[in-house]
Structures are given as C-alpha cells and as structure tokens.
Image (cartoon, rainbow, N blue to C red; front, side, top):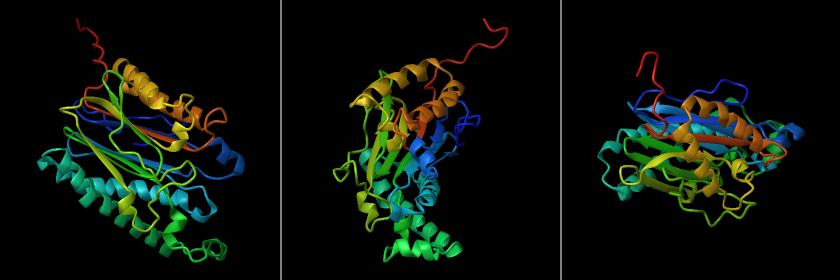
Length: 298
C-alpha cells in the first residue's frame, strides 16, 4: 500500500516473518508554486508468502517530458509486474552472480518492454494534442514520458535491486553502516540523467544483489533525488542509515509508517530540496523491536 501525506499510512504487509514496505510521496514546493504536478510515483505490494516488491520513479521536469508524471506511474507498475514474473524463478538462485544475471537477462528487459508497451497504449488511448505535438517535434513518443526508476525485490534471503537514472538506494545494516549495493552511474552529472525513455535503456540499468543470509540488513531505502538533495551532510547516506537503524530497532512499524510522510514533506519543502520527494522503506523480517507483551503477559 502507498502511504502519502494526508492519508493514514500502513505497511504493505503485516504478517510475521515477511518483508514489509512503507512508502510516502510529497509534491515539491517548487512544483506547488509553478502549478506542476507531483511527477514522482511509488508502488509496493507483497509477492509470494513473505516477499515484497517496491518501486519508485521520478518523471523528468524538462518540457520535452510533458507526460513524465504518467511515465513514472507506468514505470512503477511495469517494474512491479516484471518483478512478479521474475519471483517464480528466484528459488533456485545460487549466488549473487546468478541473481544479477537474472536481473539483467529477465527483469530489466521485462521492465523496459512493458513500460514501452504501456506508453504506446496510453498514447493510443489519449493521442497527443496539437500543442503537445508542437513540443514533441520529431521525438519518439516515449520521450514525453521520460522517467527514472528504482526497484527492490525482497524474496526469501535475497534482496535484488535495480536502478536507471538518479536517486538513491541505501542498505541499512544492523550496526548503522550504509551499504550501497548498486553501482554508481558515471553518466550522472547533476543536470542529466539516464532514463527509461532513451534508446537502449536496458544498457543503462545498474543492478545489485544482497544475500541477507551473509550480509544482514535491517532494510533498504529507495528515494528520488528530492530526498538526497534535501540532506545537509555531503555524505548523508551514513548519517541517515545510522538514524534509521536506531529507529527500526526501537520503534514499531506503525510509528515508522506515520513518520515517513512527515520526512518526505520536510524534504519537499522550501527548507529542503523543494522538489518532489518519494521514499520507500523496505524492512527485513523481524527487523523491528520485539512486540510489546499483551494484557496479562508476564
């Protein structure tokens, strides 16, 4: 379930022994001032008996990408469908190499193909107006829908991660250390980003896998760049991971769910990045504190 500011947030699943996902999205102050919509999107749902998938996308703000808010929504939906298709193949994985190969060979092409098909269907259902065609010129239709994408698939011991474009994926270790399983992208320069809308998008995806039976994690944070750009510290990932580790181990899931929209709102404000801000916090099984004893318990 998606938790947004102004709504009561809930975890995507509250079954003992399962991965859980908390999400929040907030329209940036700059977008409010200009009348632009929230161009971010987020989706999360359980897969299998105890797994979960979470996807976050950030539609591009340039005028060429005038349907990017739709593109972001289509991206998270396509990513979740592709993750569901991949999940049935994950039980037989033997090592991180196989996990990453499965993502590159099956997951990434599935995401790109399904997203482009969804874009085509959207244009067919709602053709570009005369004004939109004037802006589009000779651009491929997908350019109008340009977006980044971050994805996490939690399945048994495996945490599989994929990303195209900017934004951040930060693993949270039990000791508060920040883990960055997904390689950086040398093409990102603060002004330009790789995108689902570009030809050969499959080659711009970066992937990473964590075997949590060997590298224990409390969870992983997925965030659009509105979150990272709002942080004061240059190396903010370490500070955020330390803070989250303390909160995950001492606070209830319900409390974390209630606070995530508050944090997103703060980052999206004029005191933060003023940009749309979307986060997904994927929590490992039994990552939180022990349940409080019920009435009559010793």
